[in-house]
Amino acid sequence: MLPVADVWQVLVYYSTGNADLIIWYIRLPRVLAAIVCGAGLATAGVVMQSVLKNPLSSQYTPGVSQAAEFGAVVAIMSLGAGGKEVITAEMIDAVYGIPVTIER
Image (cartoon, rainbow, N blue to C red):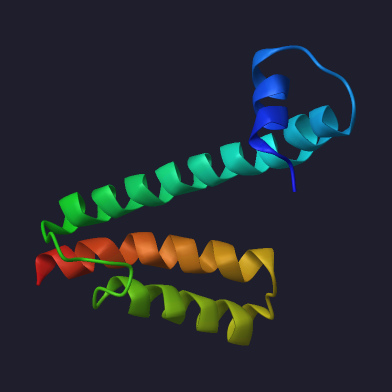
């Protein structure tokens, strides 16, 4: 556990030692990754809501989620895919499921 004074010392003034390594190489990258991931999820939610014209829509909106599941099943059963190929098939079919959902 780092005291607040040590964190302030590392961030504002140049210092060396264990606190410097912990802040710059462990904690700060995690904080920045969390900010980037949160911004990405927020952007994805805004895009989903604006494309579907539904302020309550989510990734489980009927049509989008089922299309992604269908893509995964087809990739696994017919192509023998696994790992990255299944994720790619899910993303592609989810994108194709959005226009079908909009047409309803």
